[in-house]
Image 1 (cartoon, rainbow, N blue to C red):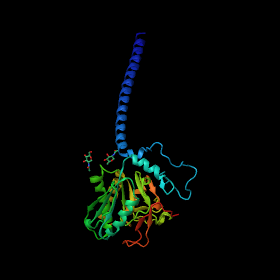
Image 2 (cartoon, rainbow, N blue to C red; image 1 turned 180 degrees about the vertical axis):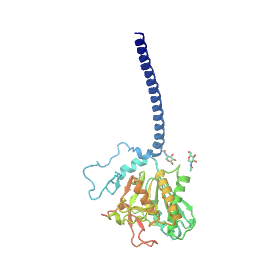
Image 3 (tube, rainbow, N blue to C red; image 1 turned 180 degrees about the horizontal axis):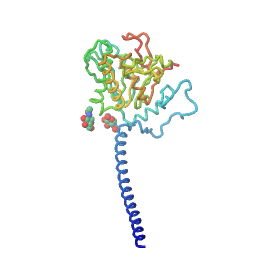
Image 4 (cartoon, rainbow, N blue to C red; image 1 turned 90 degrees about the horizontal axis):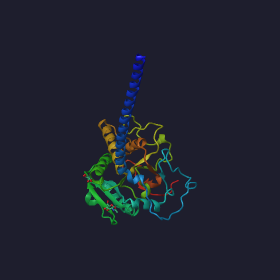
Length: 341
Ligand SMILES: *[C@@H]1O[C@H](CO)[C@@H](O)[C@H](O)[C@H]1NC(C)=O
Ligand SMILES: *[C@@H]1O[C@H](CO)[C@@H](O)[C@H](O)[C@H]1NC(C)=O
């Protein structure tokens, strides 16, 4: 009997101990989970702070515009990528609505252009047509990199727009200009834009903006489909095909052929793109490799892995086949919202 009672007390004590252990475990567990939640909430807060423009679209109350439809619209083109990014074609968006949404966000759009050597001759048309069509009514800050600051034409700009000329050394080979471009864009974002712009577009100076280019083009990472290849099978795209280059894209891979002469998006997205493409470009150069289309090849490689959040249709660019540009077919004229199909 005595032995039995001792055994019973022992068993009871063990259960009690287990109970205490379980409870203290539970306490530790719930304490830790609260801490973890706070940490996650904190880091999420930081991201929200960066991305606020993209996450929250507020339209003005009582804005009148045509009723949208989800059963009729453009059916001659594809308006969404396989990763569900919109492809912006004329007629897929309402310009009045989009402008109203982005006006409320009080955004500043920066744009860069490189006018080195004889490319300064393109500046006048570029700046004048941008003034007429590029983000009209928004705060726009154009940054022109040039080796001839005195040759930058005086363009009449509206009060909410400004032009900053940034001197760069001359360079004979346009491949070198192209290489330096990404590095200068990265530095510009770090040193000048971080506190005063929301979006940036990097545009080729030998371009003219022929039609509206506005808030419909805003998003995280923006790519433009090259008008020269949009109907082609991807095995014909002029991607870099040598595996030794960091811009390599294998046959049977790749989504679209994107244009190196126009890309953009949120500052932090374009900063990352410029940083990575520039590093890959330089690492290639150290090994004596130059990608087929330099910066454009690295950009295409980057966008194959980092999918753009919005893709602008080839309506936004039109090739000028009478190009004087060394290197041939890559001269383009920004040709917004023109029917190509
Ligand atoms: C809009 O942005 C500009 C420049 O960033 C700033 O000076 C101005 O105060 C802002 N306006 C509003 C209403 O927030
Ligand atoms: C941006 O603003 C932060 C604080 O508001 C400041 O520390 C930083 O130096 C500024 N950066 C630039 C490039 O002006």
